Image (cartoon, one colour):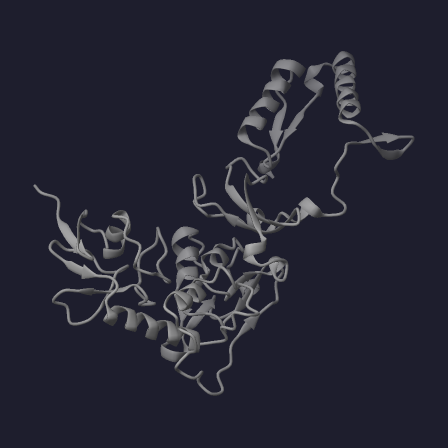
Length: 353
């Protein structure tokens, strides 16, 4: 049985049944189809219509992200009709709210801004509806929601419901009044939101922001450093966005094991790195006061105390307390140390609390 094919911009491309036009094009190395609402790994919605293409014999333009490829399709991705439709859609989005790129925190990484530049949409042709009021939420320490910049792409909803499966936000209301709502249109802090921040990372514009990063640096000023989350043994990969040697914000790296996902600690809990009260050297109590010591001094003190207790009371009087904030390998070494070196099987773990 022969593999089905489609023709994209004059190029014959094979595809697998079930693939969308966008998936077929990208698998073939064709990246002329722009997207905004599309989010890999979630169900396509075709809500933004930026990815429209022209299919021979079709009366209307088709959203590439939500249209299944069928054998024999002849597809054009950049005809005058297609590009005119895209410019019109982008203009409508720009007119839908307060998209002032000069002062927007997302300037430089906003996907709508990039599309406007690519298709040369200078000034929105449609005026903002008179009297329109936008909701601005700034009552928690982690996420800012600015609905004046929301383009209703739905990526935050799919990130929450399909990728994180927290089911904290949905698209509410109808028509011109529709918006992203959390638990009957309450604030994040009053809802079921667990502040994993996946919605922030999924947002293609400046509608959802990491509150702690606001005003700390533009995207082009930040250096990205790949590292492993220090909070547990899962080993989630982080991208630290660094400026001047300090972490400005954190995003989930799109690789195993987390594929971009993070918990609230991994995304928003790294403030301790630069905290002025962070311990940077071991402390030993001398004459009733904690004083700084070298690692050799601290380790010698611990080793000698363990030896004294073991000699006087026996190894079974010594217990070890593992941590959920180190790797599985480190926890394995600790229990091996307790059993093989100290001689005690009394090993517990803080996660049991």
